Amino acid sequence: MEKLLLSNKFYKKLAKIKYLPNNFEIIENGDHVICGISGKKIPLISLSYWNVELQEPYFSYVEASQKRDLKE
Image (cartoon, rainbow, N blue to C red; front, side, top):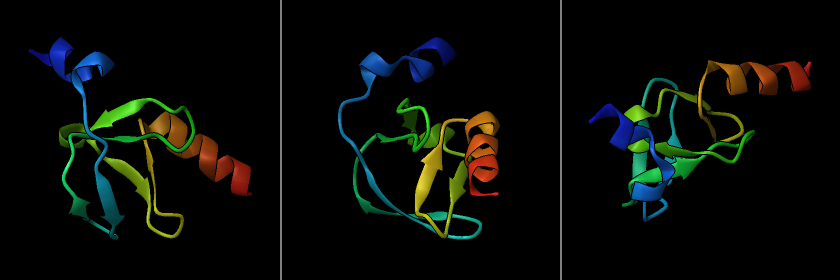
């Protein structure tokens, strides 16, 4: 089942999200968002990393760290 969740081909509709400090609000229903660094699809059920200020999601801690390093 986990392989299905991580496979890009199963996600069809891009969600619109408002990123909050400890949560996010779904503005427009969908099943995934796009990583601001890698361009990978992120299933909403797996979304754990984002930047509130930039309103940008990240696929993993790796991409989130890369973005942080770019800003410094």
